[in-house]
Image (cartoon, one colour):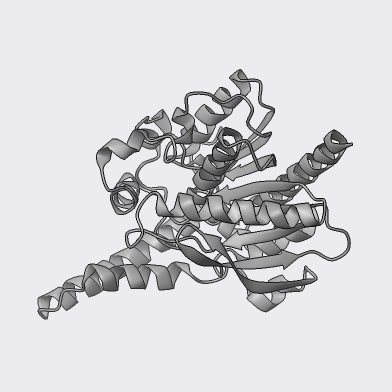
Length: 329
């Protein structure tokens, strides 16, 4: 265990603090002039800042055969998505769900991540642009994911391929929820669930939320803001479609890989889910990345942590696909 984040993340956090102070000073100057930005303007600025690629889109795309923007079914009409196809053989289909607190990030912000996963797992990746809060609060995102999963599973059946789910942070939450819904609804069968630093426990607060809730990028205040945007009522904090770690049962779920960061308030949530899956006899692999902070996957171009986590996740998916093929005979 580390006493503090590694050098790269300390430098990143210092830079973010510097930028935050400059932005705060500019906001004060703007307020002094009498102009107060609306919530909509603030949200638009956040989405613009976080909707940038981790690595140039054109360069990321060289890793795969091709990608295309497509429309897939959602909970209330069509949703945008990106379909990534690897070079060579295709071993499975993965529904990928981006993070961003259910409020921001998009297909562009996670483009490079999906390219790497497609190449390294030999899978077609369907990256879903599910509806975001606060315009579309819970359970809109869940409904979109469930509809898109059934579509992805239908496409997988056409090619006789297994299907898996994956996601980071809020996307990890949605991936876990999708796996539980699929079990409860009698299908489609999910070969595996790959969860990067997922938010899973709702009202149940692990110690990591208190220990790392300030000073490590994802703060308690930010998490509370996400929850207020996503949930219409505090009572939903214990809803199993928001807090899948609070489900009544965990048997019958697909094999899981849970990857967390050491200095992340969500770290304990992944650990709780790991323990509940394991207690129910579900195969689960757990990795905690030493010295890392929440969101490290998006910095894969600058640190080996993200690249290694993507490789490990891709290998897990490949094993899940192979086991699914053996199971089918």
